[in-house]
Image (cartoon, rainbow, N blue to C red; front, side):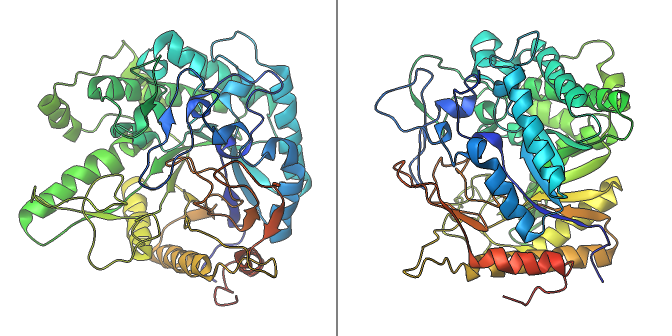
Length: 482
């Protein structure tokens, strides 16, 4: 059998995309809460001052905050062994900088963790998943400021101590490398140039110096969190989480090969190299010099990074791209991370190119580079699902996508990769982070909620629900059973 005994089959969500209850029980405003809905081709808007005439999808989302017991019971029915979710920073520390945590928030997450454990599901908790408290943005531009390290570690200690012995696997930051691209400034780092006026999410003014300095602060915070987690409970395992997007040369022209190498180094490898190897890679020296970026470090930072390497590596994987030295070639409509389209690949409704073999390639490269246990903690197909007249959702296209990616993981295991878990994204329909819409659905469970805010929030299993249940029950052997 290709998948090891005890393989962690499951799924993943994020608090800001599923919980709702955005201002209940003492929760503060997060950067997600100031983003309106959008769509493919129409950017969501960032409104630092909330508007009465705008729709904010995170405010109710799918109401998982009140319905988590129902949702986790459905995940248990599928046979989940692992559930990746986040604990909203702005719920536990409403402004991000309080001295003491919000007890109502910790009590809520007590119930969520206990509910998982009662169903035999292991919690995998992301500490910071695109939900930086907006109070920190207003106070100090969040991760632009070194003082945010202390606020983050205060949040970490509250979680590590409260859930000691019940949560053993943690991720310090979701898709930390998104901050190597302009879109990560607000999404991941809580930086926003205009704190008064509405601006589009895509196309924000960019400050590379601030982004990469912010990344340094996040690296230090992550390394110190790893040490803290081990101090609080030596059984804790802490991982990094990288948005991995394999990128190939468009042609065998050596210039294209070099273009792909440059892209992969910065986007795919830089953050993992720091968090897994414990130091800045020398190839970033030239990148920083070319752009006039100077990383300001405090004495001891390098030692902190070296001492705080992660225990395992985790990644999201959705798509790949190609790189070309030809400046006349344009990115495809779905290449939100740059690059040009691969003529050999099909694409999703949102233009994301589908490349299962790229997952096998990526896992092999990651394992060869770091030699750490690996988890694929996000993967999936965003699609426009339709409820048929008989009440069913026949998402065979999703089954095909997932089957091919699971087969790629099986191949990587046969290649020698120590792959320990798989938690596909949006296991229950939720709000899309990139576009702010419900129409882009990923789940095994359909939620009756729509982009105009209508819907009764009822849940119904899709065809993929029953397929994935068979996959888990067979430990990956029943891929062809639909």
